[in-house]
Length: 451
Image 1 (cartoon, rainbow, N blue to C red):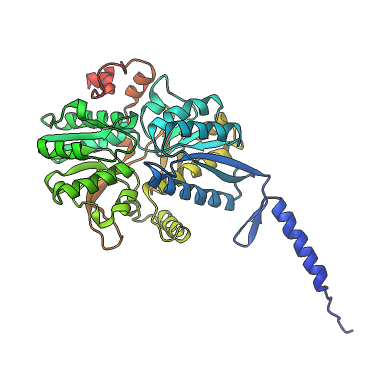
Image 2: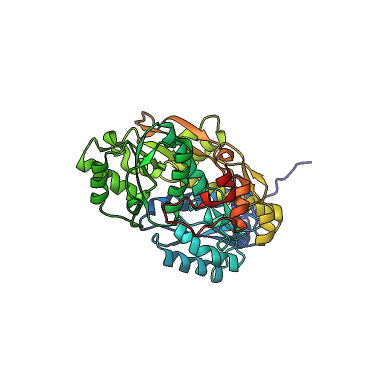
């Protein structure tokens, strides 16, 4: 018996393929390798981003990272069967626009979660709105400890996976104390973050090196924010004071402007007056070879210091660079990728987008991270035990910007505020309104006084 092959008419096959394609598109699916994921629909996650203004460098990096994270989440089936879409709106690094964006994303775009903005001033204004509407916020940039602890600010849906200002200021203070310097000049941005972190720095410095002296008057510690275009008076004051070390937590455009103007005044400025300062890959990359060597930097998530034996981060760097024209991921790109990933994992575990249910899957839980270590969210204040990296800037033969030599990755558990103090602050046992901005307010807590 002769077998006759079954012939499918080409036009019939083409029609079938077109129908199948339309069905897949209508379901909101996207391919993952050779398979297609079928979604119930789309859910939006909001981010008020500084795509312009003082912190535009950070907004650019975070936006890219969040879009990449959303695609990775969707490739694995999304969240609770829904495709995740980022809702990113420019706030120009201003508080009023960040507030407007937050209201718009919650009330009009129906976002199911938010990612924290860049500055603590923005986050302080956004938090009550998110709290009132029960929208969980995963914060990976703004970091004033008040956001998760101060009684009149606390939001049960606010989760911090960035070292807060107590942790970061403590790391900077210990770093400065280890340098055995006596005369220190302070310059910080005049708003919640700058004041909060400087207070922690001074307290940690004094505890580790009681002989250290701050040489400039507290009234001169803080400079206008955002965007201080001219730094002449600060540069002149540093030269007049002749400190052994300058401590600063200025960042983004302000740090870049300061470095350029100081070098224009004196190419040896940072040799004569070394700095302990907040740095990210963005500032290093922006200034390149102009960024001074010998800066005693503290950083939140520098990929080059976290990459050893970290296959997940190496893969992320490769994919990030392939997608974004060879750019290296900044600290913010790493932390916000972790932020969206943690929220997605928790929401999937909760089988719900309800903020209360998702928080239950975050509080006290441990998550993997790009940073090469596991992150645990402490239930007392929803603060993650994330670390800080310290080291000294030096030229690199591998990257087109300086890196850190003799870098040390400090463990978050060693930097976190003691639980007793957390509970004292949240219980109104600390006089947080006492003293001037130069006072380390937490030093007025009973447990600090007793230590």
